[in-house]
Image (cartoon, rainbow, N blue to C red; front, side, top):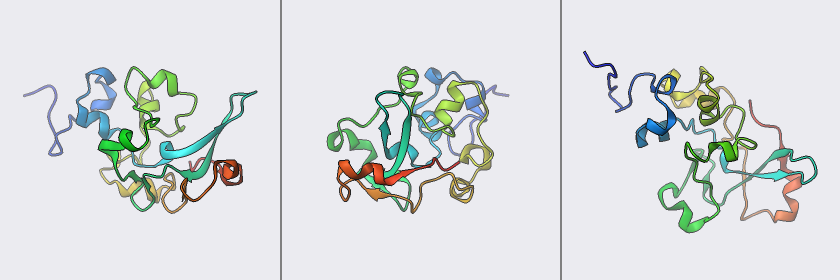
Amino acid sequence: MSEDPIRRDGLRERYWTRVPMEKMSAAEWEALCDGCGKCCLNKLEDEETGEVVLTRVACRLFDDATCRCARYEERHSYVPECIRLTPQTIPDHMYWLPATCAYRLVYEGRELFHWHPLVSGDPGTVRRAGVSVHDLTVSEAEVPEDDWEDHIIDEPL
């Protein structure tokens, strides 16, 4: 019997609890994303305190209905500043990664929440748990950057 049984979706069983991030397959890495959409929200950082707050102003490529990037594979062609999160870059982004982010949780050695699709088996649990930004956003194409402060929100937890 194999040590790492492969599930029907091509992922190893509970891989995130025992496989180092840098050893995850591309599919496993991508599956860590719960689809909450918080990383696609524009953030504001206080220059004096370093505090980061979320706005409901989403990247112009964000699809509010699916909570996913509409052009994920080629997003850097449209939004060159879009973050490419890797095991090596996570430490640089911890200060703004959402508290519920699986990449953050796994990096910190913590367990995923019960609503995460890898745990629940259902991508809809993210929305039902109230942690996604589904139907909460406005596009950055519609809101001038000077007005983003008017759209500050608390992180959906």
